[in-house]
Length: 300
Ligand SMILES: [Fe+2]
Image (cartoon, rainbow, N blue to C red; front, side, top):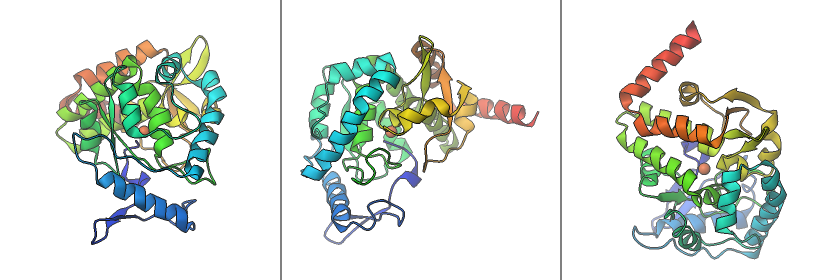
């Protein structure tokens, strides 16, 4: 899931324990009472989950399954053209259905023999420390709702398509999950909020929106790009910069539109070396030094 608070519609609890999701006026589902009721119901469902139990079953409607189908089918050829080899290998192993939304509990069962990762259901925003810390336990917090049917090809909110098609296919490949685990372990070492945010921004510009060179072609490996049929067509035209940990960890980004600054790796092995290596070794102190050097560079 996405990690920044602003991605998530605020949620409040009624006296009976049911949750209400407060969509903003600009949300495509804002004026659709049926959609809003579904969002409330799915948030409430996630809140019933208890650790150690499977994700609760979401009783998806035919209309929700159709959105999944439209997006999954749109992504078949786009993944073949623009997804990196490691993602396609994960996709081949996981074999997600394209005609209906799988349950998070099912996807967790399919991931178990591949990498051991499993999903936990999120009603909405999961605090940074919980979200990243859980990665070290091979657990991935995930929303269960589906984007509004009027905008199947892009959503600024992390819906189940993003979580399962985008992240799930990567969570099926041990080369990816080694990186997720390192990010999780790094987040657990961080004492300050600033250092934790730095770790999360590096995650954002890599495992969410990373791209790489593969046999002379630009490919995507970030789940945010690979779950968006619109963004996957657009990423090659963005401001593409070389992989730079200090810059990625210090850059702010706008979550409401396509990401227009992307960082490219020379290869998947370079991501493992540079990004994995950073997460493996970083401390509050090493991050403070990187930030300091980056600021000096900016002002030189
Ligand atoms: Fe995500």
